[in-house]
Length: 119
Image 1 (cartoon, rainbow, N blue to C red):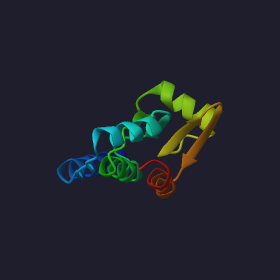
Image 2: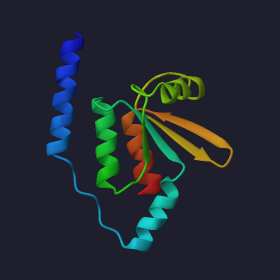
Image 3: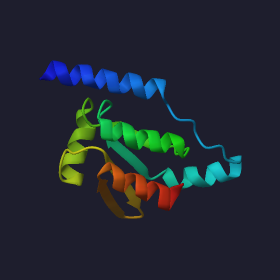
Image 4: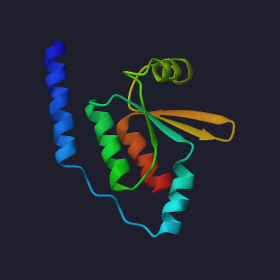
C-alpha cells in the first residue's frame, strides 16, 4: 500500500508541475495589499496530498503568497498542527488575527475563505 501511495503521490506532483496555473496579474500596489492580507496565514500541508495540491493551485491562480508548512516531513510543524489545531489533518489553514488563531480545515472551505477574504 505504501508503494501505491508513493507512486500516486509522484503522479500527482508531476501533473501539478506540468499543468501549473498562471497567477493573476495585479498592479504592484494591489499585490502589496494582498500580500499584507496573507502575511498572517500559513498552510499546513503534505506535498503530494491531492487536496493540498488543490489549495496550492488556487493560491497560485489567485497570486497569493502564503507560507506552506510541510506537516509530513517537518516534525515541528506536525506537532504544532496537532497541539494547536487539534489534529493532524491537512490541508489546514492557520489564520492569525491579532491574538486570535483559527484553524480552518477542508480544502473547499479554505479556498472559499481565501477567495472571499483575501483575493
